[in-house]
Image (cartoon, rainbow over all chains, first blue to last red; front, side):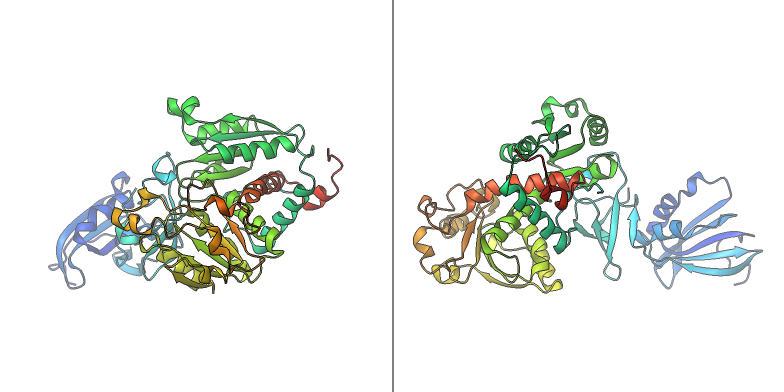
Length: 151
Length: 314
C-alpha cells in the first residue's frame, strides 16, 4: 500500500489490530485496556472494508500483546488480525484463537448465579468453539458467546 | 487421607459413588459412633430447609461432632452486607467443615474455592443438591441390590425438578434405562435429553401414567407437580390429577419395584400407597442420615477402611 493510500500513520514498532467490526472498536480498546497505556495509540473506525463492511483499525506503538491478551478478543471480535510490526515491516500476523476458558471477561446471564451476587471474577468453559457455547463454571448455565456481556 | 469437598454429584465417578454407598451401609449398621469426636461442623443455612438441616445435624451429632451455625440468613452478618467469601473465611476459623445451603446458584462451588476447610453443598438454588442425590442412589441400591441396568421411571415435574436431573447424571455410570412421565409443560428439558444421547443413556417419554406403564419399572421416582410452575392454568387443571399415584395403579408392578419421592409430598402419592410393600419414601428419608454420615467422613478424610475398623461404635 502506498503512503498516499495509507489510512492511518505507520508505526515503527508495535501492533496493528485490523479488521475490527467498526462498532466493536471501543470494546477492543476496553478489553485490551489500551486507555491505560503510556505509548502512542491510534484508534480509527468507519473505514470501508470488504471483509466486515466498515472496520476499525488500532495501532499501538511499542506494545506486543500476549496470547492470553489476544484470546480475550475472541468474545467481541473473533476475526480480527494482529499485525506485529518491527522496523515498519509486518513480521507476523496473529489470529485470535478462542481459548478453552474465559476468566473475568464476560458476565453470566443467570441473575441467580453467584458471580452476579459476589465481587468475584467469572469463569467460563468454552464447550463448543465452532458454535460458540460457553458454560458457567459456577452455575453450569450454557450461553452463547454472542449473547453475553463483557464484565 | 485427603479431605474433599462435596459440592456436585456429576464430578464423582461410578467407583466413588459406590464407595460412598458402601460407607453409608456401614453407618446403617451402626449409626452412632464417635468418629468425629472433637470436631466442629458448621451448618450455614442462607435459606430455610428444615429437613435437610436436621438430617445433616443429626448425622454430625450421631458421629460425635458438635454443631454450630445459623438457620436463616437474617440472623447472620449477611444482613449487614457481609460477602459470602468473608462469612466462609470467618466460619473456617471455627469449624472443621461447613455445610451450606444457599439460594444462589454456584455458591457452594465458590465457597469451596475460597475455604480452607471442606464444603458440603446442602443445596444451591435450582442448581445442585448432591446429598439428596446420594441418598437417592443409596435407596436405589438398597432396594435393588445394585445400581446396574435398572429401569428408572421419573414422574411429575421433570422440567424444574433438580433431583431428577441430578439422578440422570449420577446414574450415567450404571447403564440405566429411563422413562420420563410428565405433562407437556413440565417435560424433561432438551439439555438433559441431549445429555442422555451424549452418554448413551436410553430413555422413553410418556404423557400417560398408567398401571401398564408402571409395570416395567424397578424404581418409580415421584415428584410434585406444582401449580405455580404452569403458565397455562387450564393445562394445570387438566393434568393435576393425572400424575397422582394410587395403590390400585401398582397392581401390575414388579415385586422388586419401589416408589421413591424426595419429599415433602402434597397429594402426588395417595395415602393408601403408604402401606404397600412398594412404598419406600419414608425409609428413603431415613437413608439421608446414613448418606450424610458418609459425606462427613468423605469430606474429613476418614476412609471406608477406618469406618469398618472403627472402635468408637456406641
